Length: 157
Image (cartoon, rainbow, N blue to C red; front, top):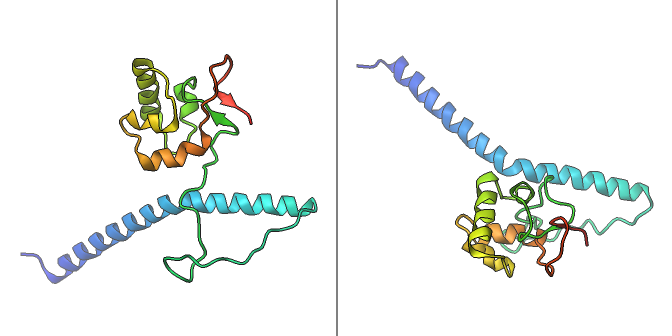
């Protein structure tokens, strides 16, 4: 039915699509780390030019691989808030600034808060559909649960 050239052409297209998809996935997972690395190097260079002492540059081997330096699993994105966000007073737009929280998840947080009341602790966010332990660990550093007060939801510590 199909000649040798047709099968070879089809195989080439399939392989090219697979390689393209793999590259796109690799780029998506590593783009933020690369941007954070560049940003970190820029801030280190700025601090060094002001006379600060550089931290030790010796990489420690990772216990799993033995030869690779340890790298944090997820670094804060450039959209991360400057201070901490109180999820009990934050708007959906403010919650979207948290890493891993998109518009729909921010809306679910606000809806859950409205229907079930305030979140007493970070673990209370687990009751929101779509927030699991991984997302909670990712956003925990950006959350604040201060005593009830008036003002915006961004607390600058």
